[in-house]
Each structure stands twice: as structure tokens, then as C-alpha cells.
Image 1 (cartoon, helix red, strand yellow):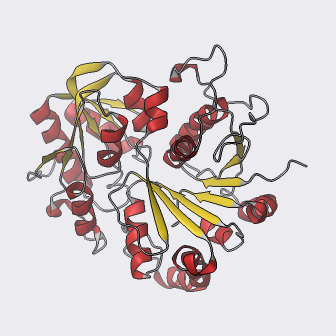
Image 2 (cartoon, helix red, strand yellow):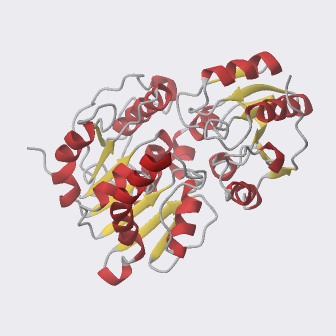
Amino acid sequence: MTPSAATLALIESPVQLLNVLEWAHAHGPAAPADAGRGPLLDAVPRQPSYHGAPRETGAAGGPASLRIVVLPPTDPMSRGQLRRMAGLARDEGYEVRWQEARGGRLAPLKALAALLRDVRAARRVIVGDPFSRYVQLLLTLVRAEELVVVDDGTATMEFIDRTARGERLVRWHRAGGGGLPGRIRELAYAPVSSAARRRFTSAAGRGRRVEVFTSMPVTAPPGMELRLNDFGWARARFGPPRLTKGTDLVGTSLVETGVVDPARYLAAVRALAHEHGATRYFAHRRESPEKLRALSEATGLEIVRPDLPLELIARRGPVGRTVVSFPSTVVHTLPYALAGTGVTVAVREIDPAWLTENASPRARGFLAGVADTARDVRRLPAQAAHTAR
């Protein structure tokens, strides 16, 4: 039986896995590169295989002490990016375990049974999404002396805000719904969510340390420690990128989450492409094929579906001299990842008129906060986006 690792990471997205690698790099000596292995992402296999036992380094976050458990979602784009990121993590010498916890009625229970020993034995547990119901369930079993939250994008801002105010851990874009069955499920799950929140908010009184490893502009509430994620691992491994003369646009899944009206979004992208002479559109992994097809037809943009998080795609290059995004994670992370390269990151604000009637009451303020707090970016005011016809 494989011994339990001192540090256990529970991650569900490619960005979370990237930030676990950044956390390990920031907390100890980086694992030495394999002889003959260059830093080219193109060399990473699309279907990564296990490349032998982890290297014994003894570092706080080194391969000998860190086990990464991937709890993959069901959508193909996320799974593909996760497999690529898993290949990078294994090439760094880390043990990566792929554990299905979705896609079937018994999958969550089977995963729980498979992970129980490791979850209870770990002295440090890293989570990428404290809003995840499955992660919250696992947190009720944790005995670790230390909890670490790594960025899952701008959700970290909401996590800090909600824990500081003692509120339920519910994502900002959820406006409720689901009728009576949904409300019953929420009530039944409330004790688990409350227990998970207490793991973070009452940690100091129980002798547990809580660290938030983040690129987001947040202030830690009492009982939490902040550590900056400046993408040192990505900058050390990849790039600097070759710059093109044009502008790249970065997509968002605000339409898919029901926050922004599809026609308004299409019109806004078309206006941005015309205004900045953009030729490429880097799609978010959750954007639907139908929406991307409509964008391509309406704008003439080349749609790029990255197979890795955008921070790594940009470090590899080529990348435009200007990168324009709507309020999202990348307006906070790309200035770190691309520091010193000469790339300008710009953020286009969201016009409140673009929001749907189903958007949560907090959507407007949250999106404005994401844009207003971004560092080292150029701010582009929202312009009225006429409905596409």
C-alpha cells in the first residue's frame, strides 16, 4: 500500500493544478529538471503517463511530500486541459492521481472511499475550490494542521469576502432557483457547507493554520495568512514569448453562467475586434461551441481553444502586444505571468445593460470590483453594445 503523503492537493480545474505547482515552487526548492528535458510545452504528451516514482527532495512542497488528486469535471475541454497539466506536474516529479468523482450515481461514494485514508492522514491539505460541494464534504473529514486555498480564479475574492462576513460559501453568480427540490437540496446540504466554512473561519482557535495563495487583490480576515502567487514557476519554466504586432482577445464564460446576454456579448466582442484590430480570440474552456461559431462568423476572429491555462499559453507565445479581456481572472494573473515581456493587458468593463434578468444581485458590483482592482492593466470603459442582428 502506497504511504499517504504529508501534503494532499484536491483540485478540480486546470488553473487550480497550475496554482498548486506555483505554490510548491514558492514554498521550497524547485525539483530539478530531468536531464535532457527542455521547457517546451510542445513536448508534453496529450495523454500523460506516469513517469516513474516521485523524486525525493525533502522540500516543503517537493515531490516527496506532495500528492495531487485530480477530481475532474465532466466537460471535455476541462478534462483535456487537466490531462495536459497533469503531464506537466508529473514531469516536475509530482505524483498525480486521477480520481473520478462525477458522472455516475455511485462515483462520489467510490471516490470518497478511495480518498478517505489519504484525506485523514495528510498533515496539510490544499484545495482549489472551497465552493465545491464535493471538496466541502471531504473537508469535514480533514484532520490536517494546515489548510491552503490556491486560486480558482476570481472566486478567491468571493471566498475571502464571504468568510470574512461569516456567510455561506455560495458562488457569486448564483441567483437561486431550482424550485422546491433545489431548496430542499440546499437545506439538506447546509450542515456540510457550514462545517466546511468553520474549517477556515475558526482555524486559529483550533490551532490550525490557513493560508491563501493568491494573485488576487484581497485582504485576509483574522485567522488567515496570505501569500502572493506571482507565477514564478511559469516564468522560470517558459518563455519569454515572441510578440506579434496584433491584439488578442480573451473570452469569458459569463454567457454560459447566465450573467451576460448572448447577443450583447457578441456585439461587444465585435466592437472590440474592430476597435483594436484583433485577429485572435482565446476561448474560455467553458464557452459553448455554438457561441464560438457565432462569434467567428460575426467577427472573422480566429477562435483558439487553448489546451492549457492561458497564463502558460501566453508564456509560450506567440502572444499579441496587447491582450484585452473582460473582467476575469486573467486581468489579475497575466500581469504577473507576463511581467517584463512588454505585453499590455487591458480590461474592458461590463456595461450593466449587458446583464440578464437572471443575473444575481451581486453580479454588477462583483464584476466592477474585478476590473477596478486589477494591477498594471489598462482600463477600457464599457461602450454600449448594440444587439447583434
